[in-house]
Image 1: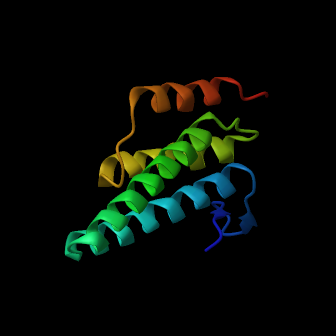
Image 2: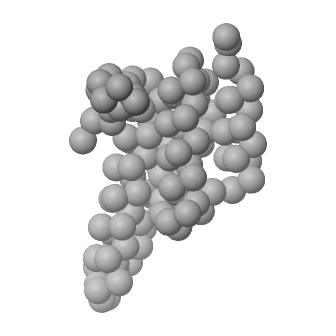
Length: 114
C-alpha cells in the first residue's frame, strides 16, 4: 500500500524517499508479526528454524528502522510523516525504538534546509 500525503485542501500527493523507507519498515514489522505467530505455534525442529528466521527478520527490521530514522527530510511534509510514523510505533508498541534511533530521528529534522 503506497503512502500518500493528504493536504488540508483534500488533494492527495504521492510521497517518495522517506515514505519508501517507512513502507519498507511497515513490511518488516508485518513480517515479524506473521513469523512471531507461527513461531508461537511451532514445535520441535520447526520452532528452531522459525526462531532463526525470526532473529534474521528482527535484525533486518532494526536496520530498516535505523535507515528510516537517519534518512534526511527534504520537506516539512516528510518531517511530519516521519514524526507521525515514529509516534505510532511508540504509542502502539509495534517495535522497540532505542535511544540511538530517536537521536537519529531528531538529528534528521535539524538538517532540513529552508
